[in-house]
Image (cartoon, rainbow, N blue to C red; front, side, top):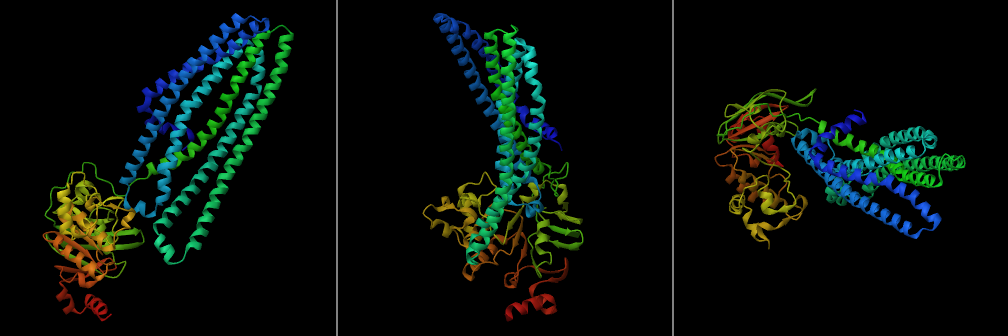
Length: 575
């Protein structure tokens, strides 16, 4: 997509700010109209100045002061109104991108770098907002100033103006060439800084592992290598911009010197008066700033293009899990779940599930066991439509889950994952995550069921205790019990326990297991566990192998069969 198309896409965000932008442009017109007045005053003041007419000089100085005052008031209105519009556009774009990312499927986030996404959401959108601001705050006023002042110069002496403009196409060509090169280099530079940001997020989130493996030098070497790539990319951009400035400045100087020679000749030929030439020179001086700003704005326009490319790349991403048009809310369910000949693969030639079928009755606890890679987690991830199967059907209470809205489906399925994710905020906020209307009484009741209330009230701040990023100031067992409380507060009819006790010590596991048994009552539960001791009380145990159910039964039935489950069990308890 070319530059024009990208910026045309931005019009959808600019349109809601039309009123503010029009008000800003009215201020710009007043601001611009003052330039030829000031140029005229410069020529007019030359006459009484030469003749020593103090009263006339004072009068012209007063007019000049008034003109400057009107211009600066208009400039203030232009600057503040455009800043307001640009920030509103940035806010709207950032909010839409964030909302769009929320709709993307889990598979996208498994391959995307969080640091890169954060950079696009912050730095790239800020740059776009700055470009929009400068287009209306600097580019448009400078362009209008250029047109108005040039018009005044043509009025004074068109021959001199024509000679001055001979060099303009050369300057325009150079500015365009530099702008294209700067856009390309800016895209590379911004990609490098995104990679650097992603590396920082990765290292800081895994600092415990870095220190445990004494890998500080290793991560420092990776960081230095990425930082050096970023430095080189930035340096190439800055070097090109540094070359541009003296080249354009040199051409401006040649134009000015040529103007002095031609102007002097015009005065000597009586084609131009001395005061008119002073006015003409003042107008030329007024062209230096807008030409300089147009040059730098064009460069920033190109750098903004690189940011636009990166942001609109995100908006172009399409989710793989799409809510069906006309999807209806899933009514409150009893918890009957059926997988009918479901097949799924992350890669086309590597199937994870193969025509798998199973039926879970309301209130039944089903345990899924098997080797890593057998498809256990994939199976339960299909239920809330974190992924969609390539073939087969998944039904809840006889309703195909593809026919209902995602929100109504997921609100009736609770998940207690192996790795508990907590967010910066209070304990109460983490338990009530995703629920805006939960009161403290309901939060406390959920915490009691999850065996979390006792440790929470031991904190000085109780439920208002601040949880650090990822819950680092809580133990593994405490974090897991908060995750259970979160699921309890949701009050789902279907519950997924994905290795919920695998990373806990025996004391924490006992507390968590007791909480889980309380939570599982009267719910349809899918339990994934490598520790077979935690699944013995399940109503039914399914053994998965290569994406298919190879054994099914209660703990006792499977032991009596002497098959795969019996061998797993024997291996664990012999160990």
